[in-house]
Image (cartoon, rainbow, N blue to C red; front, side, top):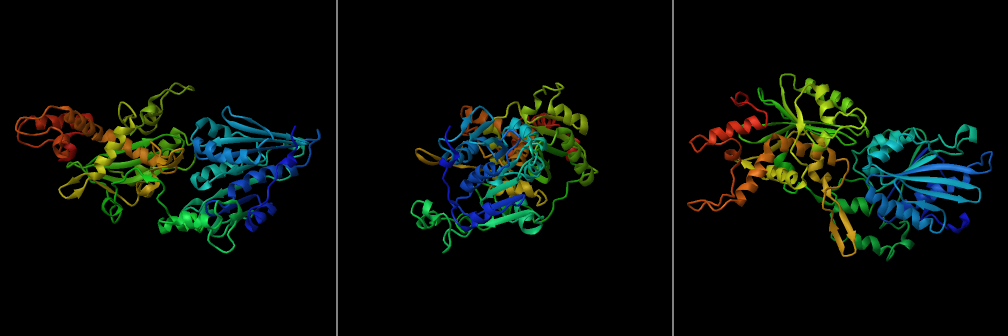
Length: 506
């Protein structure tokens, strides 16, 4: 068996040396790109394993969890970093969840790699007995995961085995925005036993890890070229800042046009429509569709508590509606079609559970969860003008949804053998859940019919008189106009399909 001394590591600067010397229960390192943060985290795990006091069997037992927001990033970045530093030492098991086992000399270390986009990984995390945990790129993780992890560490080795010599949570991150939970926790309300280590700018005289970067200091000069000042602030200077990551999904959203200057009030007499995404952190978007086809997005209900059940979310949603819209009925709740799959526990679907605990009519947003239809519905709504007014107006009370529209919901930039490209589907992150709920709201509220009508018309033969048959007017498609041609009948059929009644618009 290879000896642990074959792993050679030197901290990449004074900040990381201070990090390693600290024994605080929670320690975070924040810095620019390429500053050696991830390497320090990986080696901290190895060092703590070597410093663990031996149990009665003479072994130094420890168990760690390493957590990343998605499985692809866990594999491509986190696991890769750990492998680079432990090459030739220890054994890997790549059957999910990925595990690493180091048994060298008297060290017996187990490391479990988990991703939040895998429900089984989340369930496993909440039941683990750990010595410590590393939250990699923690700005991408909900606060509830951090809180849950702090309750799982310090539980291995057991007291019968002598207990852990040290236990705690280590975190690394590029700087988040100043309204992120990380900023609040470490800059505003930092508890005792919590420490934050900030690395200097990559262009500062005391920049760290330059010897390990291609081109040294020129690395930061090159990556800063042509970038937005906010991007440079975060990734080069390592300072808090708000960024649009990747390529925004809702590229035709305009904050100045689509967000109301103040909170929107629900239109009296018009029922509410709600879109719901279940997932690991459920979210709901509450809106109304006006008679002229425009949308009002009134508010949202979001969670950052991973593993929130349908019952608890239903209670939060009904309380929100009762408090803010006591005089309004709910005409329909539209959900991910996957929510219609039966549980292996009690054979009830998430939709049935939500309907039972809300008393509302709950149904799938569309026959399928086709991404193209969902995207077309959203882009069509953002791009629509009705009598000189935007097709959608969002209340600033829907703050998480607004953030998603402003780029939080995006296609991630990928590095491939052929260069840089964007992912085919949006990144799963803190913005994707509320964005998905919005999509289900639109589809269930009638936009699916508009998209399908548009596609159907595009396939028709040219109309007599030169009409193409592919153009569509949302007012005509959705509600029709007086003047014959079956428009009133189509209007009545349409209202019935989306659960409205003609009286709601009088």
